[in-house]
Image 1 (tube, one colour):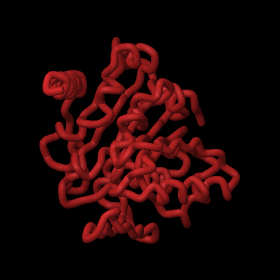
Image 2: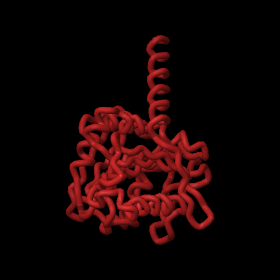
Image 3: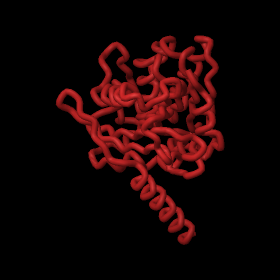
Length: 257
């Protein structure tokens, strides 16, 4: 058992190191503020071509200022050589500071599962707005196939995924929200524009799985057909089985606007 644990730790460490090597460091500046991010360009990147773009929003545990921790979960899916060959894309992992959230939300951590209150009538958080502006900057530079802009996120980033699409309903060709939550009252703004894959763990004791199911139900009521996956034995780490899905990227990249 000890040897197995050592192997797992070593494997995860090597995956993070690979991500750090293939994802370049960068900083986006706007209105006196900044957003650190990592970016991976396609293999054999050709500046004369336009590529799909994927924006990935990390969870609360990966907030910070080191411009590294946001690669902990999910980056390995995109650094995989087979996936890079099959799905060439510009992939961006921004990092949210520790004192901020992607979504405009109040989080009550006095009990678990946490309590969540969204504020869709208020402005987006500065760092969600900067992430949107960052994507638009690549679009304006002509680097992006605008029919193939995608977003995915987990936990806090799953909440950010719903809100990013909500506030930019014409931008994204598809979205994956893992163990997240959102404002059901805003779903009508994007339900028929952006296909969603909604993912959660049935045993999640941090973010209640009913939050995801409520979002999926709201989409269904609008006439959309979200893909919904609930992992029977997964807790909050439902991103692990999600990233192991053989068609995780295939589903995402199969959609165009």
